[in-house]
Length: 505
Image (cartoon, rainbow, N blue to C red; front, side, top):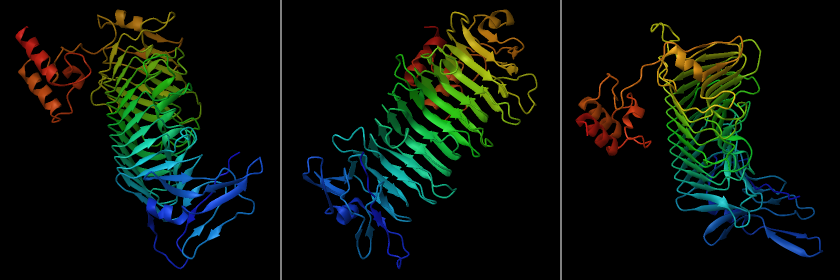
């Protein structure tokens, strides 16, 4: 079994000011330290310990085996200690990685930073031959922070959690590729309490399990926006691309794209969970995301508060088991504990081509996918969800909604997968267990194609609205109605199609 070591870069006890290290600093401290041991054949083996420079790249080396009696090497200003776990930059000290620099990890190497990490335009990856073993970063002390811009992570990831409301994690325009799970189940893994975290405009691709995750009992505050998750979950295990727990603070997941492999996959979309029944005082906002070709779309498991708004969830159909997948939207809460409720507000989603459009499972659920009777009520919800061709199963064909709990659910003001929006036709697409109910009437009104501003007609005002949407000047209008040609994008082709419709061409 491999043993790792710890490199502790500690400011002298007489010096209070923390140090910001560079990769060159690490290499200068430990690049010449060697570990000599005998292999099974009795031959002497010499290994470099620490950070070396190869072909212009920095490589972290850990020994395969520690030499007998090796416990540490002393320096006047810094202390390098060989032990069994990490290469560590000690409390309060930080690492700064500059534009164009490359840091690779050999063996099962992991760099532990008890201060902060700052990197711009850098690459972090595995040394050749160690793609399935290298771990990456572990950053966890109170006040620790991570700031990443335009960085590339290959095979390795980050475990982060400072255990407090100081410090934060910020990543923008970064790529996380082929994370191998050796350092944790996610490319970005929140391991303890942390607030003010932001992940924006990043790309996650071909990761073995989740791309972003938090521990089952970890309370975090995070905004995940503008990210693309492409063909992740290459493992055969059932994992979502985004996998966060409910929290005492709000979590925002918006304007992201989650693309599954579009094959017989176990890859999930967006999952929010509270399997340990912990604090769920905050709200998770999941809005304006595209989730397609996964085993399931968006789910809440366990007690918590979730808002699902204006998402497109389509073709999430690769596990025909409602406890594991097949649903566009799913809310599951099996606890009977008092006050532990799964509360979902569902509005304006496009739910198409899944096995089940929406599934409700368990007990202690409060589902509001449309309450239109009193516009002044606190729980008023216009619905506006659109269901299209959710296939169902042999026993439950054409299933837009399945309420598998005795608690009634509300789903008024929606458009269902039937030609006539009346009770007789809609009821054929709604299922429930004995003793339950789904309140789905009145239904919504079918929109006029291209009626972006919602005034009931198609005219030049809608053309103007589409142009403003393309320019980013309008966000309140229905972008789905603006996609006139149905190619999944809103662009000049839709303007042309709309003008032709108005002219009768």
